[in-house]
Amino acid sequence: FVTILTMKLALISSLIAGAAAFAPAPVAKTSTALNKVAFNPEMAGEVFDPMGFGKMHEIKGAFPNMFPNPQFLEESEIKHGRMAMLAWTGVWATESGLHFPGAPVADDWTTALGVWAREDPGGFGIVLLLLSIAEGEGVSHAGDNFRGVSKKTPGDMGFDWMGMTKKLSADKLERYQTVEKKNGRAAMIAMASLFAMKAIPGSVPIMDMLGAN
Image 1 (cartoon, rainbow, N blue to C red):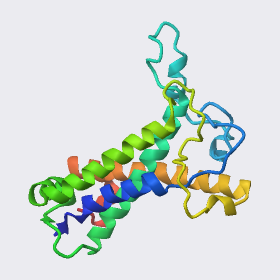
Image 2: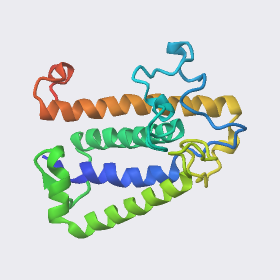
Image 3: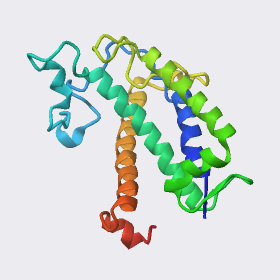
Image 4: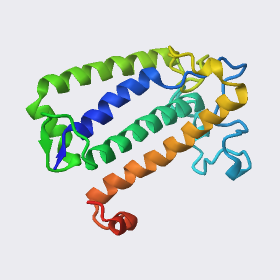
């Protein structure tokens, strides 16, 4: 049995990530998804965007601000990558037997959210409220990046109470930002594979080979 901690870990950790994520040191320019990037040597520094999502805001004839600016897309990618890394960790932590004593029990991690909400509505409501506050603060702190006028660095929540970024050189800070972005992408694919495995049996052969269920 997998306890409801599967969802608790993912949701609570997402709240923590929103506040304690790396706060990059001030830089002279704000990166966008359309510039040459150092974090993608596999594509010779070019952004991999075969569908042209990063250029949708340039479509002529569309309503003003109908499509998001690359600032918004990059911010969203980093945020969802962080949540996916935490969610992946939460799933495997509970599957490995790490649980809070007394937590509600679910037969499967995919049903854990509903079980938690039903059996512990108070705890569920508190975490949901805190997540809503964190999300609202994150959106307001990001500025109007949907229109591309934000002045902040994507992914910078302005919270670095340990002063970690101040101890890093510019090159090392950029490397950590690169590592975070790439691992976030891998985690999003990993979580998508978990949901696909559950929704469509046999759709992720490697999971069957590993004996996942």
